[in-house]
Amino acid sequence: MPVDPPPTIWEFPPAARFHPEDDLVATGADLEPGTVLAAYRRGVFPMPVGSRRAPMAWFSPVRRGVLRPSDLHVSRSLRKARRRFEIRVDTACAEVIDACADPRRPSGWIDEQIREAYLRLYELGWVHSVETWRDGRLVGGLYGVAIGGLFAGESMFHHETDASKVALVGLVELLDDGLDRLVDTQWQTEHLASLGVSEVSRAEYLRRLSIALTIPDLDFERRAAVVRVTPGGGIT
Image (cartoon, rainbow, N blue to C red):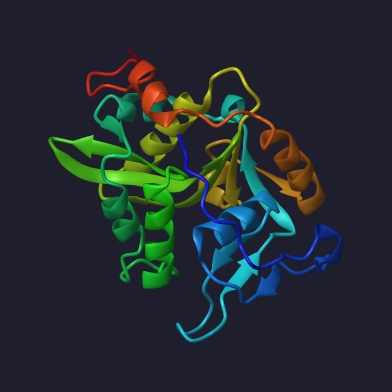
């Protein structure tokens, strides 16, 4: 289970002070574990803008992408694709982040300071990776921050068709324990919308977040032992 880091020395502005038409709500602070966790509990996440010397930017989208596990849309072709992969949890988090940070990807934003910050949170038990493997090779995956009933997805990648989608299916199966858990995708994209991600207002997201934070932390290791997608298909 996650280990609490020292509290942050920074104070994020209350939601009432967020600009109603701007996703960017703050700049500065640091990426210490306590700071990053405090931000997520406020509905805020970091994303670098500009050079490494530029202050860290903190976002709370006016329109937020969210997914309830029960809303996931798994097409017939995706169900078929799922049988080709093995899903593992927290076995290659650094490799997943590195693949998501590949500078050859368009609109890449994960730099070394972000990588270090999330690996520290992984070591403390707050960040988790869901990975798709095939023939012993990591071919897709995602990672994000889990706090209570919130899973804040950060990024995903694939080296084979549907590998990242299958990772999302695996994540939802882990989270689908009968409680009202929430997957935050930051922004909605056409790709995510096809999987069941919807768009809500900032106020509605913060309302759902307040509920999610009252839900107990998920024991990913124990849950992964109960729910596991195998290469041959099906759930064991």
